[in-house]
Length: 148
Image 1 (cartoon, rainbow, N blue to C red):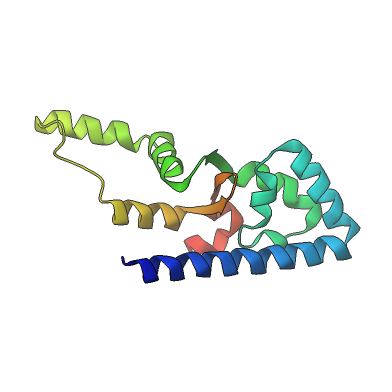
Image 2 (cartoon, helix red, strand yellow; image 1 turned 180 degrees about the vertical axis):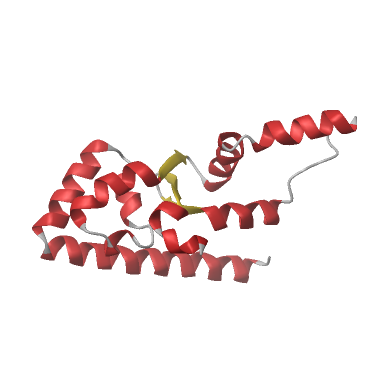
């Protein structure tokens, strides 16, 4: 990927996050229920603000958003690479790969294809990147229809 493609990808992410943030601010400003959900959620967990940027969240009833957060939150790390590493550990995939390598008799025979690993994780999880870290939420919880 060249620098122009990287810059365009970053610009698209920033545009998307800015648009979602503006929609959230509009909801919060227009609704006491959303305002209360924001205050309660951000007091409960640092990841809650990032959670509001996740797709499908603002379509929910504000009284149910805290419960949805509890079900959808998976983990957070300093950046996306560390979040991916943590998800591989969280899902037990590293142990499975190491066991398979041992059984095959080669320590590093099976490795993760970075693009394929990211594609699998993006199908299952929502990554919200902010200046303070990378927050991961369960896509099935946020959008149950994503599995149909």
